[in-house]
Amino acid sequence: MGVSNAVRNPGSYLSRTLGLYRSLLTDPERFYDEYIGTRGLKSELALVLVVGIVGAVGNYLVLQELIAQFDGIESVVVNQDVRFQLQQRVLEPLIGAVLVWIWYGMGMYVIGWLYTTIGTTYLAMKRAAWVLVPILIANLVHTAAMVYLSVTMDISADDVSVESRLSDVVSQAIWSQAAGETIVVAATLAGVLFAVWAGYIGAYAIKDVRDLTVDEAYKVAAVPTIGYVLYIVYSAVTAL
Image 1 (cartoon, rainbow, N blue to C red):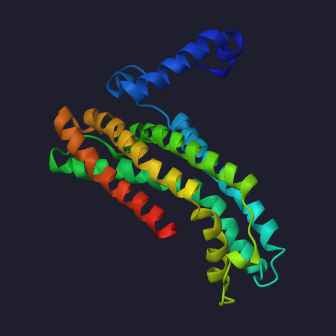
Image 2: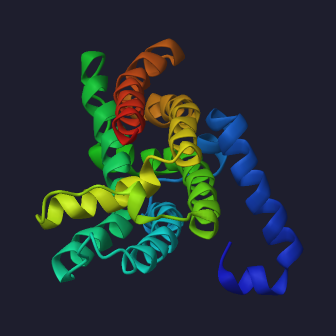
């Protein structure tokens, strides 16, 4: 349904949109059968972009607060090199959204070769983009934690000990003041649940592409899902 139709009939547009996402999250087989065609990537690219932006918002707000607070700590030098490296943290969720899309799409497509050579990379990637909807929710949870932290954090010179003047070491020490907070680590670990949810949707994303049975599709989707879960756990543990 186009923008013009949404303007003319917003009630119908909203109802269809809610039905689409409800179906995706609870009945992905029906979602792929009824809502997703084979042409165009406009909606999928927009979804990946939104997932990244939602995650970037929290990082941006925390970064501004970190820089403001560390500017008042004389023992830590926040020069342009440090600022540049910290600013890259804002882009990480955007890059991460693209990488997760590729990880699930290409991962399931390649593992599917164990069962059949049917299917195209294009269709696998198109359908795999919708796997990121649970990741969008995970990013919302993480951003909410970062927003809370940005208005409650209070860093003093006693909280920080940076002996090195190397910009990467200093930037890591500064960012760890946020990334290592309990609420942020908990939000990161919550991503495990959404990664598994994404894998559940992914099974139906790849099922028809490779002409798999449901059991085969679950096995195929399990491989990238387990890999992503391990990455999330590793990220949370190393942030402590």
